[in-house]
Length: 229
Image (cartoon, rainbow, N blue to C red; front, top):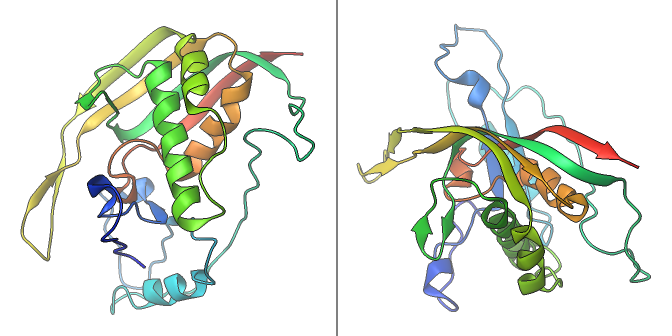
């Protein structure tokens, strides 16, 4: 469950995206005293199996020197595309948003890492991640037209970009290998007909976006939404 893999299908998905994301940025640099409590967020996406209890039991055994004292659950219902009748869902019109990239984020387009989070690239990677998680752990991939979605996202303009690169790494306790965890952090502001994309951005606050999300990369916040009716 924590190291999913498959022998068939695209080689890029042999090491499958994990059905979870840890959120523990608030613990960076902290040292816990004996008896002190702390918390972290754990987002679980496997809806095909009754697996959450197994995941919680694994977390309870994660560190012998720590005791799992409580678990609080919260379900999030996110409406992404159309309602059951097939008609567009009525939403408040949105024409300007700001996205804050809270942890190092690495986005790729055409096989290359991009330096700026242009909205077309950001929306496409969010779309792909949500669709992959649905295909592996829920009711199947998104049924939208990916090309048309990407074309509409490409019309959104980036009006302000204040980001910088962060270099960090982790060492695997199992293999001894050092893995880069770098990427950009900061803020970007976008303008255009954003209404259909806001639900995807909200979903990405749970799933993360880009590479190495299970390790905490790609955390974003929909920091400001300026809308009109």
